[in-house]
Image (tube, rainbow, N blue to C red; front, side):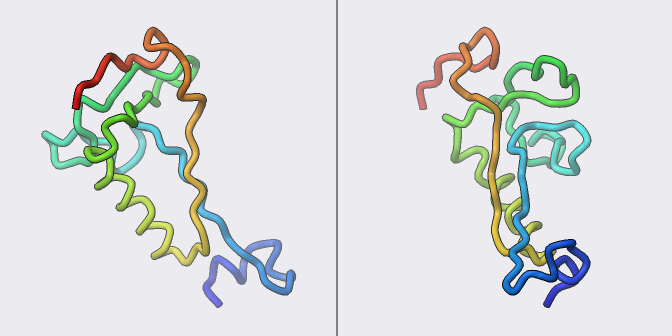
Length: 108
């Protein structure tokens, strides 16, 4: 059993499962926040507006999934390396209008 399972309060359960929660957004404090031009995982074209109330976070344009896959794969691998049993990928309401998200029409 990994350390994450042994130190977790639910470790007394018969079959505890640790779930890695990933907020899939651009967050300036993450190690992978650098733009692609600086060796990071975020192509500039995928970055949208700042989240209202969270100046260190920005929307991502998930219609460009192929461009975001390297970042997603890296974050999921990080969860696996830390011993988590599953991953929950989360994001805020992506049905907001372009005026909120900053995403414009994408043709490819």
